[in-house]
Length: 245
Image (cartoon, rainbow, N blue to C red; front, side, top):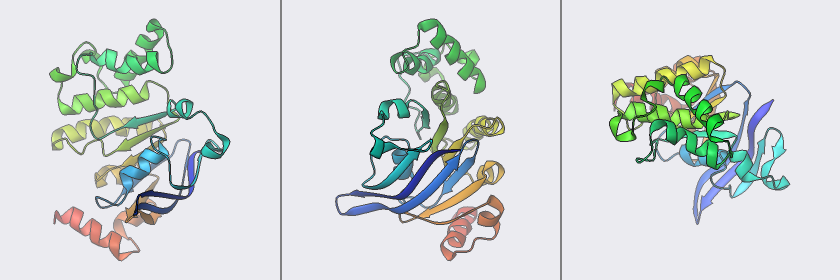
Protein backbone atom coordinates (compact mmCIF):
# COMPACT_ATOMS: atom_id res chain seq x y z
CA UNK A 1 0.00 0.00 0.00
CA UNK A 2 1.22 3.48 -0.87
CA UNK A 3 1.93 5.66 2.17
CA UNK A 4 2.77 8.83 0.26
CA UNK A 5 2.35 9.62 -3.41
CA UNK A 6 2.45 12.78 -5.49
CA UNK A 7 1.44 13.48 -9.07
CA UNK A 8 2.92 16.35 -11.14
CA UNK A 9 3.98 18.22 -8.00
CA UNK A 10 5.07 21.81 -8.57
CA UNK A 11 6.13 24.60 -6.23
CA UNK A 12 6.85 28.22 -6.97
CA UNK A 13 7.82 31.18 -4.84
CA UNK A 14 6.76 34.15 -6.92
CA UNK A 15 8.49 33.75 -10.28
CA UNK A 16 10.94 31.18 -8.95
CA UNK A 17 9.81 27.65 -9.77
CA UNK A 18 11.54 25.30 -7.35
CA UNK A 19 9.74 22.03 -8.17
CA UNK A 20 8.86 21.41 -11.81
CA UNK A 21 6.57 18.40 -11.94
CA UNK A 22 7.54 15.53 -9.66
CA UNK A 23 5.89 12.11 -9.61
CA UNK A 24 6.74 9.94 -6.63
CA UNK A 25 5.44 7.04 -4.58
CA UNK A 26 6.65 5.23 -1.48
CA UNK A 27 5.00 2.11 -0.09
CA UNK A 28 4.89 0.77 3.44
CA UNK A 29 8.27 -0.58 4.53
CA UNK A 30 10.23 1.00 1.67
CA UNK A 31 13.36 3.07 2.15
CA UNK A 32 13.94 5.69 -0.53
CA UNK A 33 16.87 8.09 -0.66
CA UNK A 34 17.04 11.39 -2.53
CA UNK A 35 20.42 12.75 -3.57
CA UNK A 36 21.40 15.73 -5.67
CA UNK A 37 23.18 19.10 -5.59
CA UNK A 38 22.31 21.90 -3.19
CA UNK A 39 19.48 24.07 -4.46
CA UNK A 40 17.85 21.28 -6.45
CA UNK A 41 14.63 21.38 -4.41
CA UNK A 42 15.17 18.38 -2.14
CA UNK A 43 14.27 20.07 1.14
CA UNK A 44 11.31 21.86 -0.42
CA UNK A 45 10.02 18.55 -1.74
CA UNK A 46 10.37 16.94 1.67
CA UNK A 47 8.54 19.78 3.42
CA UNK A 48 5.66 19.55 0.98
CA UNK A 49 5.43 15.78 1.33
CA UNK A 50 5.39 16.27 5.10
CA UNK A 51 2.51 18.76 4.71
CA UNK A 52 4.54 21.57 6.26
CA UNK A 53 3.70 23.74 3.26
CA UNK A 54 1.31 23.33 0.32
CA UNK A 55 2.25 22.71 -3.32
CA UNK A 56 1.50 25.28 -5.99
CA UNK A 57 0.17 22.58 -8.30
CA UNK A 58 -0.22 18.82 -8.25
CA UNK A 59 -1.86 16.20 -6.08
CA UNK A 60 -0.61 14.47 -2.92
CA UNK A 61 -2.05 11.21 -1.63
CA UNK A 62 -1.68 9.92 1.92
CA UNK A 63 -2.61 6.23 2.18
CA UNK A 64 -4.66 6.57 -0.99
CA UNK A 65 -6.54 9.74 -0.01
CA UNK A 66 -6.13 12.88 -2.12
CA UNK A 67 -5.26 15.15 0.79
CA UNK A 68 -6.05 18.62 -0.52
CA UNK A 69 -8.97 17.58 -2.71
CA UNK A 70 -10.73 15.76 0.12
CA UNK A 71 -10.02 18.46 2.71
CA UNK A 72 -8.61 15.99 5.18
CA UNK A 73 -7.45 17.26 8.57
CA UNK A 74 -3.85 18.32 7.89
CA UNK A 75 -2.93 18.40 11.56
CA UNK A 76 -4.08 14.79 11.93
CA UNK A 77 -2.03 13.74 8.88
CA UNK A 78 1.04 15.64 10.12
CA UNK A 79 0.78 13.75 13.41
CA UNK A 80 1.23 10.51 11.43
CA UNK A 81 4.41 11.70 9.70
CA UNK A 82 7.71 11.92 11.58
CA UNK A 83 10.07 14.67 10.39
CA UNK A 84 13.75 14.82 11.30
CA UNK A 85 15.40 18.10 10.31
CA UNK A 86 19.04 19.09 9.78
CA UNK A 87 19.00 20.65 13.25
CA UNK A 88 17.06 18.86 16.02
CA UNK A 89 15.85 22.18 17.53
CA UNK A 90 15.28 20.70 20.96
CA UNK A 91 13.81 22.83 23.73
CA UNK A 92 16.85 23.83 25.78
CA UNK A 93 14.91 24.09 29.05
CA UNK A 94 13.50 20.56 28.76
CA UNK A 95 15.23 17.23 29.38
CA UNK A 96 15.55 14.64 26.62
CA UNK A 97 12.56 12.78 28.03
CA UNK A 98 10.49 15.95 28.20
CA UNK A 99 11.46 16.91 24.64
CA UNK A 100 10.14 13.58 23.37
CA UNK A 101 7.04 13.68 25.59
CA UNK A 102 5.87 17.18 24.73
CA UNK A 103 4.46 16.33 21.31
CA UNK A 104 2.72 13.24 22.63
CA UNK A 105 0.95 15.28 25.30
CA UNK A 106 0.23 18.47 23.35
CA UNK A 107 -0.55 17.03 19.92
CA UNK A 108 -1.78 13.50 20.61
CA UNK A 109 -3.27 14.44 23.99
CA UNK A 110 -1.75 11.43 25.77
CA UNK A 111 -1.85 11.22 29.52
CA UNK A 112 1.48 11.79 31.24
CA UNK A 113 2.03 8.14 32.20
CA UNK A 114 1.38 6.87 28.67
CA UNK A 115 3.48 9.66 27.13
CA UNK A 116 6.36 8.84 29.46
CA UNK A 117 6.25 5.16 28.53
CA UNK A 118 6.19 5.95 24.79
CA UNK A 119 9.01 8.47 25.14
CA UNK A 120 11.23 6.04 27.03
CA UNK A 121 10.54 3.37 24.42
CA UNK A 122 11.56 5.80 21.67
CA UNK A 123 14.72 6.83 23.51
CA UNK A 124 15.64 3.16 23.88
CA UNK A 125 15.19 2.71 20.12
CA UNK A 126 17.89 5.33 19.48
CA UNK A 127 20.07 4.18 22.40
CA UNK A 128 19.52 7.36 24.41
CA UNK A 129 17.55 6.09 27.41
CA UNK A 130 20.53 6.64 29.73
CA UNK A 131 20.43 10.35 28.88
CA UNK A 132 16.68 10.75 29.48
CA UNK A 133 17.19 13.28 32.30
CA UNK A 134 19.96 15.24 30.58
CA UNK A 135 19.41 18.63 28.95
CA UNK A 136 20.35 19.34 25.31
CA UNK A 137 23.34 21.48 26.32
CA UNK A 138 24.82 18.41 28.05
CA UNK A 139 24.72 16.33 24.84
CA UNK A 140 26.86 16.10 21.73
CA UNK A 141 25.40 17.08 18.38
CA UNK A 142 24.94 13.43 17.45
CA UNK A 143 23.14 12.69 20.70
CA UNK A 144 20.84 15.68 20.19
CA UNK A 145 19.98 14.44 16.71
CA UNK A 146 19.23 10.98 18.10
CA UNK A 147 16.79 12.59 20.53
CA UNK A 148 15.27 14.39 17.53
CA UNK A 149 14.77 11.02 15.86
CA UNK A 150 13.23 9.64 19.07
CA UNK A 151 10.82 12.58 19.14
CA UNK A 152 9.66 11.75 15.61
CA UNK A 153 9.58 8.01 16.28
CA UNK A 154 7.55 8.25 19.50
CA UNK A 155 4.33 9.06 17.65
CA UNK A 156 4.39 5.74 15.77
CA UNK A 157 4.45 7.54 12.40
CA UNK A 158 3.43 5.92 9.14
CA UNK A 159 6.65 7.28 7.62
CA UNK A 160 9.81 9.06 8.75
CA UNK A 161 11.16 11.92 6.62
CA UNK A 162 14.83 12.83 7.08
CA UNK A 163 16.20 16.11 5.72
CA UNK A 164 20.00 15.69 5.74
CA UNK A 165 20.06 14.79 9.46
CA UNK A 166 23.88 14.58 9.54
CA UNK A 167 24.63 17.77 7.60
CA UNK A 168 25.91 19.71 10.62
CA UNK A 169 27.81 16.84 12.26
CA UNK A 170 31.46 15.79 12.05
CA UNK A 171 32.38 12.35 10.73
CA UNK A 172 32.29 10.50 14.06
CA UNK A 173 28.94 11.96 15.09
CA UNK A 174 27.56 11.39 11.59
CA UNK A 175 28.05 7.63 11.91
CA UNK A 176 26.49 7.70 15.35
CA UNK A 177 23.26 8.96 13.74
CA UNK A 178 23.65 6.75 10.68
CA UNK A 179 23.83 3.67 12.92
CA UNK A 180 20.45 4.56 14.40
CA UNK A 181 18.93 5.09 10.95
CA UNK A 182 20.43 1.80 9.77
CA UNK A 183 18.76 0.05 12.70
CA UNK A 184 15.40 1.65 11.85
CA UNK A 185 15.80 0.44 8.26
CA UNK A 186 16.42 -3.12 9.47
CA UNK A 187 13.24 -2.88 11.53
CA UNK A 188 11.23 -2.10 8.40
CA UNK A 189 10.40 1.54 9.17
CA UNK A 190 9.18 3.40 6.09
CA UNK A 191 11.69 6.17 5.38
CA UNK A 192 12.24 8.93 2.84
CA UNK A 193 15.73 10.34 3.29
CA UNK A 194 17.57 13.29 1.80
CA UNK A 195 21.28 12.75 2.34
CA UNK A 196 24.78 13.00 0.88
CA UNK A 197 25.91 9.88 2.74
CA UNK A 198 26.35 7.68 -0.33
CA UNK A 199 27.64 4.59 1.50
CA UNK A 200 24.57 4.65 3.74
CA UNK A 201 22.26 5.15 0.76
CA UNK A 202 23.83 2.21 -1.03
CA UNK A 203 23.33 0.00 2.02
CA UNK A 204 19.72 0.73 3.00
CA UNK A 205 17.88 2.20 0.00
CA UNK A 206 15.37 0.26 -2.04
CA UNK A 207 15.54 3.10 -4.55
CA UNK A 208 17.72 6.16 -5.02
CA UNK A 209 16.31 9.24 -6.73
CA UNK A 210 18.52 11.96 -8.17
CA UNK A 211 17.04 15.44 -8.10
CA UNK A 212 18.36 18.30 -10.19
CA UNK A 213 16.87 21.74 -10.82
CA UNK A 214 13.48 20.79 -9.40
CA UNK A 215 13.10 17.51 -11.24
CA UNK A 216 13.85 13.86 -10.56
CA UNK A 217 16.04 13.10 -13.56
CA UNK A 218 16.99 9.52 -12.70
CA UNK A 219 15.88 6.85 -10.25
CA UNK A 220 16.59 3.20 -9.69
CA UNK A 221 18.19 0.64 -7.37
CA UNK A 222 21.40 1.76 -5.63
CA UNK A 223 23.72 -0.41 -7.71
CA UNK A 224 22.41 1.18 -10.92
CA UNK A 225 22.40 4.80 -9.80
CA UNK A 226 25.72 4.69 -7.95
CA UNK A 227 27.76 2.46 -10.24
CA UNK A 228 26.18 2.79 -13.67
CA UNK A 229 24.07 5.96 -13.93
CA UNK A 230 22.48 6.70 -17.28
CA UNK A 231 22.59 10.50 -17.27
CA UNK A 232 25.74 12.64 -17.52
CA UNK A 233 24.53 14.93 -14.71
CA UNK A 234 24.36 12.05 -12.23
CA UNK A 235 27.79 10.80 -13.33
CA UNK A 236 29.27 14.27 -12.86
CA UNK A 237 27.69 14.69 -9.41
CA UNK A 238 28.92 11.33 -8.13
CA UNK A 239 32.40 11.90 -9.52
CA UNK A 240 32.66 15.23 -7.69
CA UNK A 241 31.17 13.80 -4.51
CA UNK A 242 33.60 10.91 -4.38
CA UNK A 243 36.52 13.02 -5.52
CA UNK A 244 35.70 15.85 -3.12
CA UNK A 245 35.89 18.51 -5.82
